Amino acid sequence: DAGITQSPRYKITETGRQVTLMCHQTWSHSYMFWYRQDLGHGLRLIYYSAAADITDKGEVPDGYVVSRSKTENFPLTLESATRSQTSVYFCASSESTLDEQFFGPGTRLTVL
Amino acid sequence: AQSVAQPEDQVNVAEGNPLTVKCTYSVSGNPYLFWYVQYPNRGLQFLLKYITGDNLVKGSYGFEAEFIKSQTSFHLKKPSALVSDSALYFCAVRDPWAGNNRKLIWGLGTSLAVNP
Image 1: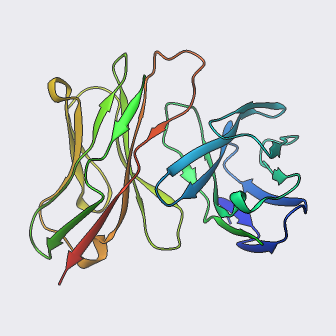
Image 2: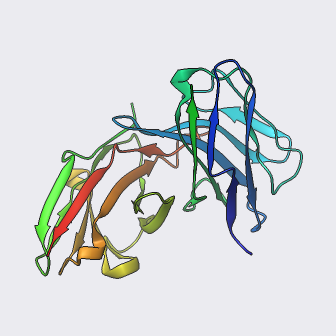
């Protein structure tokens, strides 16, 4: 199916564990983004990527790692999860930075 | 500094009445402006955008927004609200002259409740 998908949709993990959230888009959009959404903070950009093998930090990158070896995939890894990383994570893509972004359904992550 | 303000955390309106969700912004250049909607437990969906041209922009689901440069505003409007419009609405702005600053600046969102 065309679009942008995220997996898993729900994840519960423990403090200190490594977690990877997956994002896949079928449009061949150049740009991909990871956001976290928390009550009172709106959407905050974690990392973004302008193309395969090109990534850059957003507002809140600490504790996260990304990679983009293929245009269609943009995984987000929490190297050692902390309770403060409990959040809803959204992946998005766009053709350019001046175009609208298309969002995935989100991953609800709980760190115990 | 670039910023977006959505001054109302929540807006309540009766079904059939007109609705307005407010957004003001601060950027150094001419802005690119966006509205998104988020239904419960869903990702954000694009509603409309202003890039250039006609200050009144029409978007999905009967929504429209008016860019008023003198007021640095981009309020979202709909002539007749539906209960199904109840959702969280986000305004976002990008300064196209911001060079390598590629990120959108997001408002904190406004929760719209349309009462039957």
